[in-house]
Length: 405
Image (tube, rainbow, N blue to C red; front, side, top):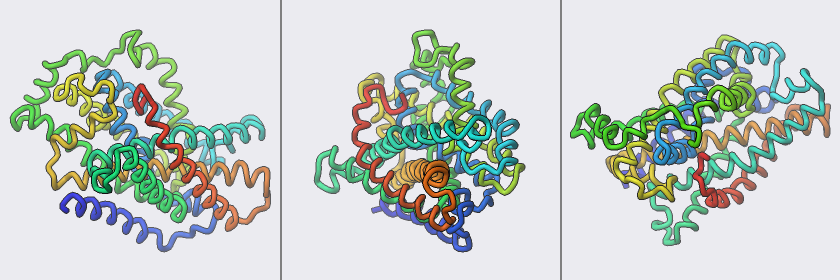
């Protein structure tokens, strides 16, 4: 009962705050629905960017990855901070000056209309086929592990995961369909603080337990048990060779933080250039701290469980949570995982709806469409894609190398 109460209080509180903040927002206009009325502050942009990026596939998948491979996966976060600074200084000023709604619009200005349409179609396809199902499935794993949905319903684990996927998909769709970008961004900000607080609790409590209430002693014990897990320089045969940091990985990060519609759409909805740049720089600061939440716990898992879960690495983080977290906090942490899932899911839905409505529908089907109808098209698109993602999510179970890979 305590678990359920803390879960409902946090999740319900976020929903109420979002609804209350949206009362005076015009969601019938294109800018109002797709860009939050271009009214987002730096902190809201940072919270939304962070939660759009960090979801259950990071909490569960990346911790599972570090459980197997160690600290070398920290490279994803370090290079993110570099890319965010570059994007804030060089990319965002140009985007805002052009008054963009989508990144493919920039590509049309730089190249041609064919490039715009082709990239928009590729992005839509990739988001629906890969990102959305992974977010739903990894979130379902977390909720199932913490709440035991299958046991409560009296069904097997596969059916329990299905039910959880449907519930998460339905709730996430409501945010994206009825609230637009501003609802997504506001809920992301609150969930972001919850993620940092709840996420940091896990390694802190674990290290205190290991070190007899002394965090430093606990960390020393974990290090002495497996010093190779703390190596941040990847060998050539590792999942992240050191050479990759200065070649493919940094290019990947520049795209992700500077041209990925789901991320940069928050900056496009900023009040002004100053707030947009502030949002990216704050996000970069958060990304330096995030390994404490999505990498360190995985290494701690190795101390507790050795190689027991190497063949099921995506289940090891929930095992650690149940081991170290007090019962009265499990509901709050489940709400944090739910919030992270919803944030990424509804962010991607909103971005895909924006891409289809602006770059496909308005560009090729109805050039003179009114804002009201375009927003309606966006809502219908979100609904269709949400259903598609829900049905595709269980297929992610076949990812043999783990969710993050």
